[in-house]
Image (tube, rainbow, N blue to C red; front, top):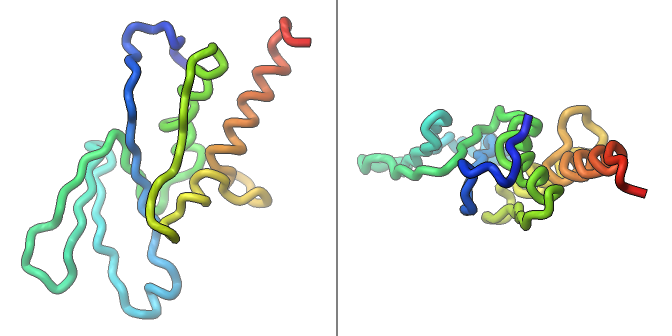
Length: 139
């Protein structure tokens, strides 16, 4: 169930979500350790500085996803309402930003051949085409 874009509880704003990827096989082989801890309910991440007594750095986001998060959950939380609003005639933008190798492509496109691993873009296209097919006013 989605809210209408005309819903007064929805204001125009930028929302920021973060997704933390797991260690790569190379990082595991090199003995790297996970330095990020998450509190998904509060949208917080804590980044430790290895070999330091400094307290972890804390960052807060609108949404926070760990390496076990499902593509479908990320789409539902971060993109589905934007796509719904676009289909109602409002502007919307979804983009991924970050350092090379951090998982942007995986989040945005996913894996075509793997069930349930489609990213934001293919899920968006699927929702758009379903809406077009179900809209009796389209020719």
